[in-house]
Every structure is written in structure tokens, then in C-alpha cells.
Image (cartoon, rainbow, N blue to C red; front, side, top):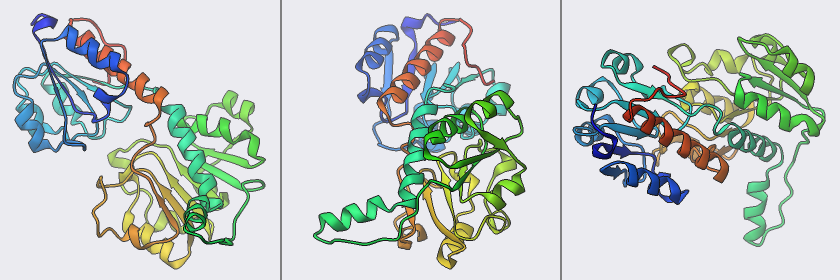
Length: 322
């Protein structure tokens, strides 16, 4: 194995070099060459194919890492994901080629949960619209809804879903959860009731998605899924863009079957300028910012750095996916 001091590392999360300066300093002290993504957005498979030859380790953002990408990376030993999701990484190809893939579990759970609750509150009380109109000289009167007495359904109650539930305790709302693994101790502590998928959709005023993106969950939120939701319900997605069939969501928002939606993730990022979401007034769009808080980005950065350096030093990573 090549000595760590002779290794080359590619860093693709665009915020990495500008956050905690100790991250950049430590990485550049310990390896021979560091290349940063300066495009301002995730890299395509084709872009990575041009950058990865000669690279020993990669600290990866939301880039497209497919089989062709990994085939071009003859020296690559590790893909250290800056975040928890690995749906953009061809794990089978990595495993076949002996490339270790790691992630940073629970590093951003609190930050994503905070954004989720923020979006729920802004859906029910149109703070964003009213603030803009007031700043423009208006004095708007919007119909608003209280979270008190409403039912919030968490579709997925893993690390982030649980953090959302804990933050909803003070709002006097009911919290339902659907998950393939039920944690009764957690449910008892926070007053959460586990229910079936259909019961969650039928009974919840707000549905918040907290499940991973997999082939089984691809466009799970489709016309049938939305058809089971309460008329006039709200949808929040801070999980994965591929969970939602965007055409079906637009149709439901235009018809009024859904009262509103708040999305931090999308099938294609950034959104194209002619996307139909932009013509809707009952939707909140944010730029995949769930993990963009000081505590979360620093924690993810240090964990990804540590995992990358561990593998390149011949040590066992702590959070290996494959």
C-alpha cells in the first residue's frame, strides 16, 4: 500500500474547504496532493472519470459515482461519503473492485430535523410569503393554521425521524410513525404511536418523509400514495428527491388535493429553470440545505476525513457501508 504521505485525495463537497479550516489543513498536511471541486455543484460521472485517475481516496458529496466512474479509478481505495446516503454510489461495483465505501451516520440528524420542523411551521403559517410582502410595503392577511391539535406523520422513524419527533413534543400535536423497525422505548418516551403505512397517510395532516432512497422507494410518493393522504394535507421531504414523483405532486398541488408541500431535495439538482414547481404558490423550495448547519457540516467533515485517512493508512474504517 502506498504511504499516506504520497496519496492523492479528491474532495467533491463544495462546502468542505470553506467550513472548519482545520479540515483542509489536516488533509493537506497528511497527503501529498488534494484536489477540490470548484464547480459549485455535484460532479457528473463523466467529470469524475476525468478527475479520478491517479486518485487514492475520495471524500464524496452527491456526485454520480457509477460503474464507469469507478472503472476509471484504478488507484482508488476509498469513497468516504460526506453524509449518510449512498444511493448515488454504485455499491456493487465498488465492492467488486475492492473499493471501500463509508458514510457519516447520524452526523446531520439534528440539523435535518431542525429544518424539517422549520418547513412544517412555515407551511402551516406562511411566514416566508408574509415577510416578503411586508418588506415590499404590504400588510398581508393570510389564512394560517396552528400545529396544535394537528397530526404529524413521520414516514420513517430512523435517526432523523426520531429527532423530528423529539422536537415536536412541545407543540401539542399528535405524532404518528411508520417504520419497518419499531422502537417502543422511543415511542413511549416521546408519545409517538406506530401505525401502518395506510393509517399514517389517512390520519396525518402533515406527512414528513424520512426514509432512504432505494430501488424499492423510487417515486414511492405517486398518485396512489397521495390519493391515500387526507384531503388538504401537507407534504414535507427532507430525505431524498427520488422518493417523489414530481409530476404527481404538481398535479395534487394544483388540484388542491394537497394544501401545500415543502421540499429540500429533488430528482434533479439544481432545479431546471422551467420546472413546474416554480409556477406554484403553495410550495416551499429550499436548496438541499438540510445538513448545512455549523455543527452538522463540521461533524460530517471530520468523520469523512477520518474515514478516508483510516483506509489510506491501512486501518479499519468505523462506518463502512461496503
